[in-house]
Length: 316
Image (cartoon, rainbow, N blue to C red):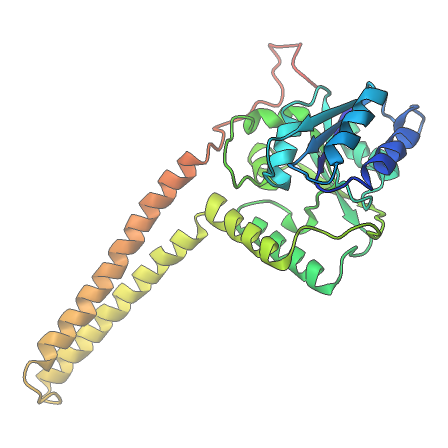
């Protein structure tokens, strides 16, 4: 099996060289446990200011298997991942972080479900949470946001992934600045699996994902790839319309039996109840149409072929 390891790099001048050395130590020779025959390492430098680009370029000069890709500015982790994925040359892509928490010796275990044909996408799920309480709570919030965006088995999602490179054909055209790789992968396959892996605690530096950044990322996923907020407006409009109709009927009934004695109250109350309900229902209908336009604008593929019996040269 030949794999392309994509690593988004941000302020990782201290961790990049040890990480690449660990990858070479584990994957340089294929064994029974390690099925990797060839590999490349794509270091995507995401607008760093601490010398990470220099380290990446030196590693690329020292190892033909290493490629350094430097972005013009900081675009974000998922954007950097996409930049590396579209440039991957081998049939399997593995994504991992640059902070030494994802262990290269766990990569072979993640390739097993792919090799057996059990899944198109495999996530490495840690034995235990590698972050603190608040960071882990924020991560679970992100996964709930992924669930709302339609990602299957969102609770297993992690930045440690392995998937067939052919899946990128379903989203290589995307140019969304608020991209989410896991949402894009969910567009191309529902054949997902997870492998329990060991992860190390972070000992150098600290994560750039603050609680605020994680909350913003969750909001971007929900509003960028899901119609749930608009559907909520549609349901709210329908409920308000029904309540308005009921209230209008109650007001008219009270007038008919003589319980209302204030002149003009029945007319005003009925009009407010009926027309406010109609307005909310109209907003709901408009929201449904906007949601459909939004879905079309995301670039979600109509279909993606896995195999073709008339094309024997298609990737396995």
